[in-house]
Image (cartoon, rainbow, N blue to C red; front, side, top):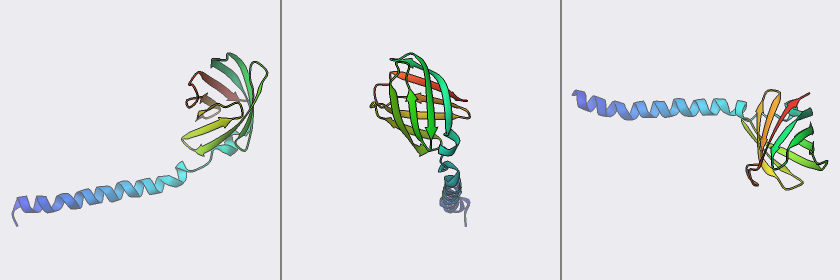
Length: 124
């Protein structure tokens, strides 16, 4: 068998093996990615909101259900959903967006409803 024929036959095999390795890696990583972060969020959080509203904000979270006390005194009830690495939220006052979890810190952006504020809170 000449070299060109061996190379031509080897290429599909190499591509198939690479696909199998990549697919196996994704399947193995799935349980880690699907872990809920809700239990680690439970508790009291304090921080600030900047943008359309500005000031101090407090938040209590229990099983991915949150109660935000806004700088103007209004209460906003929110639900977090999703899995790592990105959570989403929807609130009683109409805002929806994303939640980035970085250890004991959350960064919340209303990316789906105006993109006009950012909340940064730290767990007490």
